Length: 111
Image 1: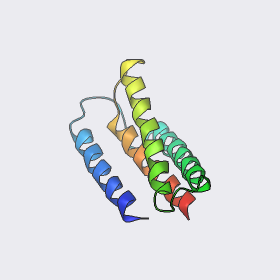
Image 2: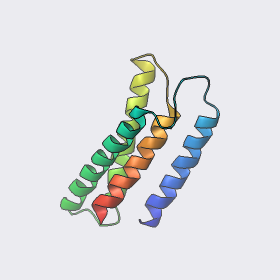
Image 3: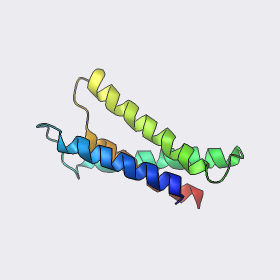
């Protein structure tokens, strides 16, 4: 994994963990069935975006960042949708799983 992606992942994980610590009273387990879906879908999006960036002849070091960023943006959009449209709640735990899946997919596709 390149250093830029590792640094970005670390910063996002710290922010996500901080958000989880301040989360209030929702029944949102860390290992619920939806968490695995978040990780799997994020991995798929990140891998697809990374492969697309590589085929577009973007530099080898930038392709995983593009894949990660694309997938993470979709995860943020999903949480915003949950909060604003569905009127449920913003899940920091879902976002943590999105980060995990995004890193996994972008790294796997860049190998």
